[in-house]
Image 1 (cartoon, rainbow over the protein chains, first blue to last red):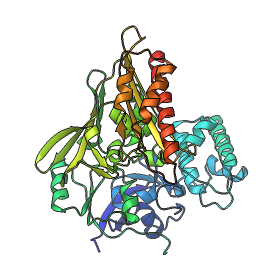
Image 2 (image 1 turned 60 degrees about the vertical axis):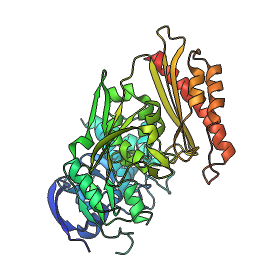
Image 3 (image 1 turned 30 degrees about the horizontal axis):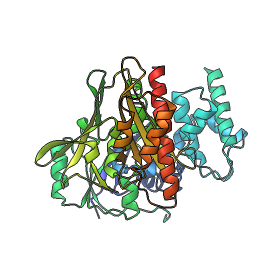
Image 4 (image 1 turned 135 degrees about the horizontal axis):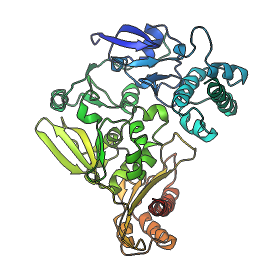
Length: 160
Length: 297
């Protein structure tokens, strides 16, 4: 077994240290080491997006990042999206718009959608579908997800 | 929790200079993998298609994260620079639209945040989206090894599916793409049965430069993907266009010639017949789009 490596990173705004083996993915360490089980394992090969987190502001599949690569990085997981006990408008709109059924894909969609709205506060339907092509949902047929993201975008814009 | 398919053990190093990376690669004697974005390598390691005792992360080497562009000198692209950065750099997207046509559809956003053009090239898939564009731009690959550096044209890089001309201990450092004139245009398209997130059944990149009048093609290059053991240049189709007018008729004739270099396999993605047909159609369409882009610029 390879020697464990000490990694210092910032997760959801808090400096976090952990020990990991080089072979461990960021997803494994988040879920099994840090008890941040909001990020889901779907395919574990970069197709489904259920494990999406933001790494230095960009959405990545955490199953395709080695935890050792997170040294010095800023990570946002689904656990960091709600602020001070209040759901983010994306989360609220997903609930109100019934944009989930089984819910496995939802954390990845919320994080991916947050990354999109951070850069493009008023995306078209096509832009939403294109930018979230790396997130798969087998329940909703996507329409309710897209509409909920549009609704969240409107609320965020009218709040500013 | 037993659900996660874990990787087998390996050591990890992240050298900060190229010479150290090349030395580590050589010393591991074929038991090392170079890690850029990891979107191919980590899947291959996890699924047992590759084995490694050592993973060498090259993202701490500044030269490999370059994205330097100037209109008069062209583009120098670090081998580990992620696709997302290429997509969002406006002057690069404007100068090399065929490259960005490809980097915008390599996986989804999560993949593009990590995956690099250099990694796509080194993975050397016949269906790699970024290689036909690199071929039509006549990109040059700058390699570093324990014995020093060398450069080769991109059309000499891929040798067979998953195989390339990197020697033991050698890694790709940068890619350079020549500057583009205002009278040059380019495009890349692939066919997949979905809208996004799939591997090309067949693909084509086209590049052309018009003369000063804009009515004659001065130079043209066409490259095809997923229709041969490596991405290939369609030389005869490219030569046919030189001195001709940029018309749909000539683009269709070039497409017919491009079909002749297609020697695809039958597999679950498509039949030989379908792929050969696609090679012609995609050649014609990318030529028309490349021409339209010159007119619109």
